[in-house]
Image: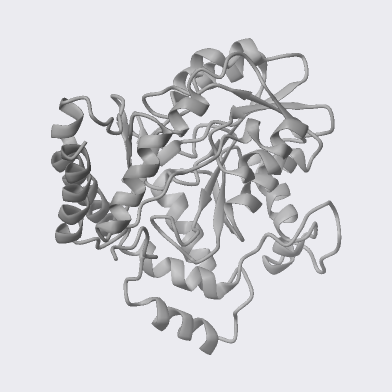
Length: 377
């Protein structure tokens, strides 16, 4: 069976983990954590990058830094992972869902402004599949209405919009290093702080509300509890595992893009015949091949295709159930406007196997199975 996902493994991970253990420093903010932070700062140009225990933690930190309070409203797509909403619900906010674009599955930037009220505090664009939202328009709207932009870039490490890295457009950007992501520490994430005025408080929140980071830098003679916070600092072992991949981040990126491009080439004939839809990459967007998906005609056809692929040795999965139709989504949010595409398009979407070092032979097997399904229809 061709796995849907295999976590990336370069080979140096075990060496670096052993090194961290030998250094007798396995809690957070050791050598490897700092090295990872530096990689992201140098790669993206963000003012400060801080590893976190997860992208969920990064989003929770962003919600605190943006001073989200009960009664505030936060605008986002419904087609996203639950953490995107949870981070703000935990601060007492109401989630306002708006429809997505059917071409990219990203939030429709043209529907955001109509959803803004006097309670709106932030816009949270989600860069689905590592493909950028229309950040020029979103940032323009945010500036006009004095709103925070908090990017859920969980899937978008190494992706850019008009030459600028995703996660660096808003006040805060949030990355994920879950085992399904392009770069992994098993569980993990990072928050990008793009405005210097938030750096000091971000360090405090991440260190359980203490000024411990200043203590370690010798800026205070003892540390104490100074603000709210939580345990958002990951283990040095996670950072050591991640750093091995960040050392060869371009190699991993190029490998995944080659797999993505091969899928596209092999399946394009079916798209030309109108049998399936393939991913769309807008002009000015450089994606990271986080996933390769196709769209079937409807949910019934998708279900049959998943079964057919499994019978032919390939694992394939659908993705999110739109949040606004979930029990918690109904309780903590509302959908603004018409759900024209969110449910319809999510019902059609099917993710194919995609991971670092996926072989050409396996891609051909998957593509052949997709072709055989439609040839037999």
